Amino acid sequence: MISRRKFFANAGAIALCGPERFSALQRGGPYAPQRAGPYALILGIAQDGGMPQVGCYAERCERARARERPRYAASMALVYPNQDRYYLVDATPDITRQLDLLDEPGFRARADQRRPFDGIFLTHAHIGHYSGLAVLGREGLGMAPTPTYCTPQMADFLTNNGPWGLMVSEGRLDLRPVVPGEWNRIDDQLQARALLVPHRPEYSDTVAWIFRGPTQTILYLPDIDSWERWELDVEDVVASVDVALLDATFYSGDEMPGRNIEDIPHPLVPHSMDRLQGRVDAGDRVVFTHLNNTNPALFEDSREAAEIRRRGFEIATEGQRIPL
Ligand SMILES: [Zn+2]
Ligand SMILES: [Zn+2]
Image (tube, protein in one colour):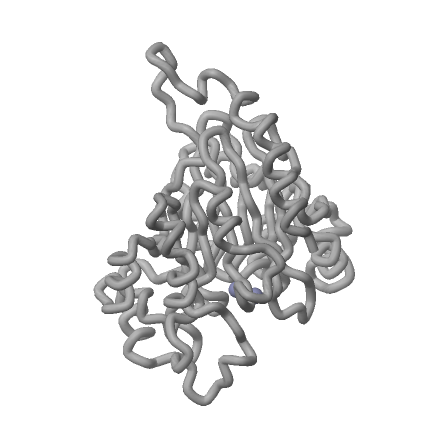
């Protein structure tokens, strides 16, 4: 795992090859054409099982069923409208419908040619984060070869297990294993860096991704067992980015009666807020995502959602755009 010293050494190095390399057009100016800049598009904010969740007929899931738009599993897209470039960050079981949120005209034309993405970034091998790849395969989209960025362990998992192995051997998933901790130049306007995080390693290790676009740097960290078990200080990592999207699976420890929350550990939202209040008070943006169907903050009118907002934190919403 990357050491704290190396984390900041690399952070310093990237400052030399950051926004100044990007085109003057993107920086804008009095005579720059008014064109939409790149953005991260939130495609889903629910934990892996989605919302409503299968077999759940509690009031919260019934409320979600009655909504015009259900919550989708946590995922996002990186959209470069002017360059007609699109990246997917995690592929969820809800992928078919949640890609309808990507309403750039150019996207549909590209998807129609079986080449919707310039790249796919994966965090880990739990169902909410990669199983949506299935409908991109032969029985669904029949996706053209697409660079797929993940850890070497995740790449091994995809290569050696069906049905993903077929997508690899057919060339649809063009696996690009990355070295955790190192920056990767994805194109002239996107750099990406994976950070290993402690999280139940049944099938693969888990990473958070940091994406650096022309104007902002975004941390995407949907799953972690515990801030305290991480080799990095979450406060430092949040301070090093412009916007941090963080694991908010559970709000309280008694959300799962009959199930031992120790078996599915996540930092509780109030604890995360306690650790990061100083960063938020200093002006950093912390946006919660990956909320379990039991987390009352999924509903904007809940006391818990109000408390999150009162403390200056945010809750991601489907369709939300964050400049990149
Ligand atoms: Zn998850
Ligand atoms: Zn997970």
